[in-house]
Image 1 (cartoon, helix red, strand yellow):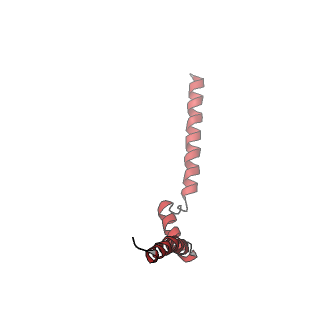
Image 2 (cartoon, one colour):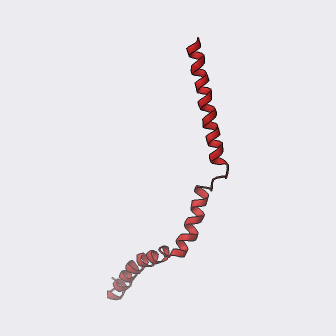
Image 3 (cartoon, helix red, strand yellow):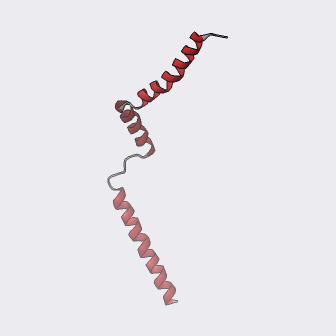
Length: 75
């Protein structure tokens, strides 16, 4: 077949490829830039008034439900 030189080359590739990927992908700079971009695309920052709007909507729905219950009891 290829002899011992080919086997040594294959073994070197088998060992350096995963180690090289591990080294490259575990760099803090790479992680910060790539991960922050990905996180901002998946979970965009909330609007300033978003929580306030959510609370107003909850209050509105609760009042509407209470009115419906009062109407049903009155009938």
